[in-house]
Amino acid sequence: MDFDAVTIMALVDELDATLTGGRVQDSVQIDADTIGLEVYANRQRYYIVIGAHQQYARVHLSSEKLRRGVQTPSPLGLLLRRYVEGSHISAIRQPRWERMVMFDLEGPEGVFELIVEPMERRANILLVRDDGVIVDCIRRVGPQDNRVRTSLPNQPYTLPPPQKLKRDPANLTANQLGDWLDNTPGEKTRQILTRRLLGFSPQLAKEVVFRATGAINTKAGDTSPRQLVSVIQDLFAAFEKTGWQPGVIMQEDTVMAYSVYPLTHLDGWTPTGSVSQALEAYFGVHVGEGAYDAAKKPVRAIIDEAHVRVQKKLDALRRSLQDDAALEHLKQSGELLLAYQYTLEPGQTELRAQYEVDGPELEITLDPSLTPLENAQRYFEKYEKAKRARAGVPALVSATEAELAYLEQLKMDLELATNWPEIGEVQDALQTNGYWRGPRTSRPGGGKSGPLKITTDSGYVIWVGRNSRQNAIVTFDKGGPNDLWLHARDVPGAHVIINASGRTVPEDIIHHAAAIAAYYSRARSESRVLVDVTQRKHVRKIKGGKPGMVTYRNESPVTVTPAPE
Image (cartoon, rainbow, N blue to C red; front, side, top):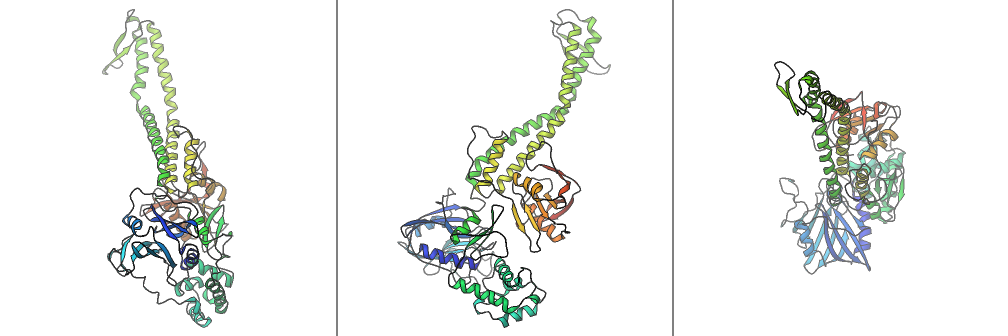
């Protein structure tokens, strides 16, 4: 969800009141996109997370001490040590309606600005001198990347271009709004607000329209301009007076959204003590694809080791199915011994004979302590034992293939894990199923992760399992018999359910859910992915299988481009 301008307004108020006048005592680089600062202010230590991840950009105070997550800091990370550590924060501010946080710093090396631009797909962190020249940035943007605005060392820093077509909501009148609504009566009101007003993210627009009309998808022609302006004025009057009310949306023990004002259009609103607490609850203490690499590394090594071991077992079983010659040799040896038993001499240790006239001569080893008949019987016994063992091999092959598929799923679970509980659940599975070598260890984090719940604009609920345990919950607890079930074909990944509630699910909702299923699968990096869709009643647990392992039928494939929720 958007780290929008209104959230930043509230955050800047909080940070300015808490940190201004404080001293930056330390800086760390948490991962490739994220830095952390330790600030001593008002006789207390504070930790700030500053992230420029392209999906999870953010700024907030952290409840935990921040740890360095990379062995070699980036050039910006090294420059922060030189120019920022030891400086004092003279102000924290935000250009009006811009999605930016500016830290004004004064220290032994001079006056600098640490500028954070937490914008999806364009997020950046820049260190700028007092003359407006960029020292360096976390993500360098040249003219080949952006023709309008570059971000490079030794180049002047420029603000984002002004949004000339948007109006300040503080100056909005009912007549102006009425003209917009009258011009496009069939368009959703919330879409007009996001297009026409500064600071309006999709979430804020939904909330305003819901407060004014009782629904989020009200059309412009069905909206009262005066009622809508009244809601906007009341809300923004509270913002101007720093009347922030931060909180999160809790569903199924999972934080689904955050805001700095009560969300009435969603169920599960829970207030928090501060803006930073709401943001940290949503994003977690750390975020970004590299944030948990250190924790994942030993778990990944166990999975890889188990994978090699099980693959060798599978290869041996498959070879045993192909070794017909050895089994036939036992049978033919017994038959030849019966045929030649009267020609064998006492103490003879070997018989050479042809089973077929034109066939090769067989070499049959004899036990001289046994009679020819007893030797023949021994070969027949070995043949029957090998035949019985071989009869069970196909079942062993199937079981071992399923075991290998489960390890592949656990590997995908670990890759998708974005917090301590999800990493811990993979470790639990490895220990429970006997893959963990050495003593059992306590797993990181606590509690259980929950599946992702997405509510579409049209009211359909989509459930997404992001690991094996969640997959089982999504398919058999969240899904009804006639709900739609989706899974990327032939690769480990998420089970996805669309709660149909007796309705016919539109094609756009199916494709949206399929894109999410593809994204939460091993094929997430591919441009086009085949996703199977069937009713949940056609999905069955594999007898004796691990959690989340199923078979299904009556599927219809759709081809999609992987996309996050």
